[in-house]
Every structure is written in C-alpha cells, then in structure tokens.
Image (cartoon, rainbow, N blue to C red; front, side, top):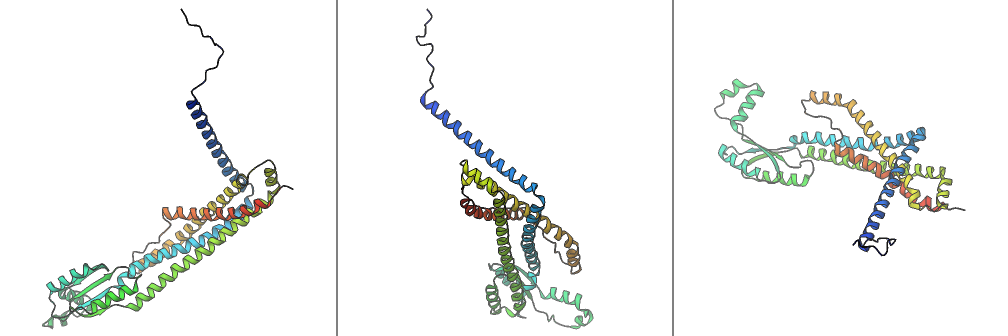
Length: 335
C-alpha cells in the first residue's frame, strides 16, 4: 500500500549547517558586489565630473603636468648624464709603467694577479712590442725608430677600477697600492679629473632629488586645494548626504577618485611633455655624439619608470585629497 504522509502541509527544513552556510555565502557575495559597484560608480562618476568642467580641469591638470614634467625631465637628464660618465669612466684608468727589467711573462703574471682584485673591473696588458707598434703608427718617426738598438718603451698595464665615479677613497687606496708594488716603476692617474666628475654626478643627483621633493609637494598641495574647492562647491550635496545617514567614508569616496584622476591624468600629460622634448633633442644630441665618435644615445622612460611616474603622481594627488577631506568633511554638519 502507498504510504500516506500524515503532515502534507509541513514545510521541509534544510539541515541547519547547510542553511547557515548558504545564507552566509550569499550575504558575503552580495556585499562584495555592492562594494564593487559603489566603487565603480564613484570612479566613473568622478571622471564624468572632470569632463563636465573641461576648462577648470584642463588648467589644473596642466599646472600639475608641468610640475611633474620638470621633476621627471630633470631625472632623465641625470640618467643620461650617468650614461655619459660611464662612457668617460675609461679615462679614469690607472696606467702602470713597469720596470725595464720586467719580462713579458712576469708582466702577464702580474696582470693576472691584478685581475683577481675585487676592486678592479678590467685589465689590459701592453707589451714593449705592442707599444712600439702603436708609437710607430702614431708618431711618424718610423725611420728614426729603426735606428734604435733597443726598445726603450716600458711594458704598460692599464687598470680600470670598479665604481671609479662613486668611491674616491677606495680608488685612491688602490692607486697607492699599485705605486708601492715592486713591479711598478711609475703609476699615473688624474685624480683631480675623477674628483670633478664625481662632484658633477653627485650634485646632479642631489639636485634631482630636491627638485622632485619640492615639485612633489606642489602636486600634493595643488591637488588638495582642488578637492577643497570641489567640496565647497558641493557643500549642500554633502550636508544632504549626511542627513540621510551617509558615512564620511561614503562621502569622501568620489572626491578621492577625483584626486586619483587628477594625479593620473597629470602624470600621463607629463610623460607626453617629457617624451616630446626628448624627441626634439634626440637628433641634435646624437649628431653631437657622432662628431666625437661616441656611442651616446638619449635615454627615454622605460616601462617600469613610466609606471612609477604614474603611480607617484596618482598617490600624491590621492593623499593630498584625503588629507583635505579628512578635515573638511568632518567640519560640514547639518544645521
């Protein structure tokens, strides 16, 4: 016989564990989607507000872009200067003139021992025969040299130190150690030129850092002041939002995204300004490099440097906006 249910209208209840997990998962997902939608709406609505006032937005972004381009452009100048000095680093080599009685085999052993020095980047050995060939080719006294019974030129070892433009004390110590070596008759290096080159590079680096800090503060304050004016213009809107129970975080969100867009667009504009300026200078600089038989090529922003530029400009604007919002929004209270 077919079994008849005694309680046909009794609702079926799921197991407590399954029901609780289902409710919790759905609630978390809904909150996550709502959080995402709120931020997306604030992100694009803030961008729309910027486009709704094109003249004001263009003036603000233009001023910030000029400030950022000055700092980033000077940074590129320092990077290119470092590239140039790395090419001039060969002029800071130490020339070791060995004693006349040192043989080629002994000189080779001495050069190999120098290569093992951790402060040495490269070593080049010039034998007496090689030195004579170079002298014969460049001096123009070939017939007079043939009269000589003995090669008067010494064996020369050219040593290129590591980080010659950075650590002057280590370079001086290395030079003094070579001078005291028993194989060396005379050592030569223009330490004054090295010092001048070090001073130029360090001064340029410090100047780039100071300029970046000052102009970064300018971006910070200009973005903050822009958001302050935006809050003033939308004062009634903020007060009404507080009356209906909106939190400070909810009110601040679109203003923070406005600050982000201002910083981001200013960084993009600054990148274009610097890149166009470098493109204008590129041909002239490479022509000048070619006249001096150099391999100097103008460096532009790399992919990583571009991302860093956009990130710094955006963060400075956002932080300046947040600081202003943190003060201004609390002061606006419904009467």
